[in-house]
Image 1 (cartoon, rainbow, N blue to C red):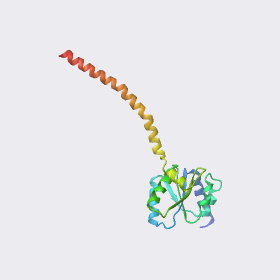
Image 2: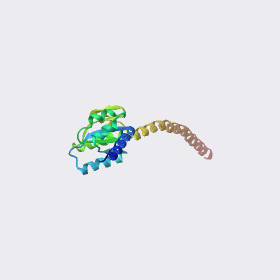
Image 3: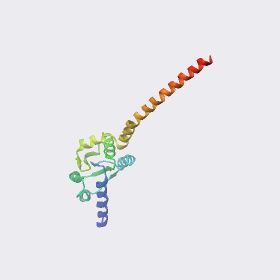
Image 4: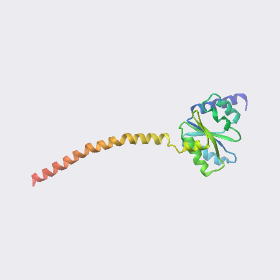
Length: 171
């Protein structure tokens, strides 16, 4: 890898560290190519990505970034899992580690907040952005549907009363 390629990698990693909601660092020693492809596929479905990079280049890219604290985790065979959604990458990595013990979570960062392995697990249990939006919409919509039902109910009662009065008058 020549100097220009290294500079490009450092720039790409810098953008990842800058724009990601969460970055998870894990050791992947012993994972097969097929297992890594499964992890990449699951991460892609969740809206995230997995990146293997030289630790030295990743440390250079981390300089001056909010998540600079994860630099100490970058030793040995490490992989970076990241996503814009602050929960997605952590969820996918935790789900993957349940079935595959070769991937070991070392920690991560959520913005400027450093996460230890327990912190990554706690983040993975939080609801995702879509789940939060759905619950907010449900909370907003529930009173409106209740109000519509309350407004509509007396009208149907009145219609029922009028039809029974009409039936009596006809009889």
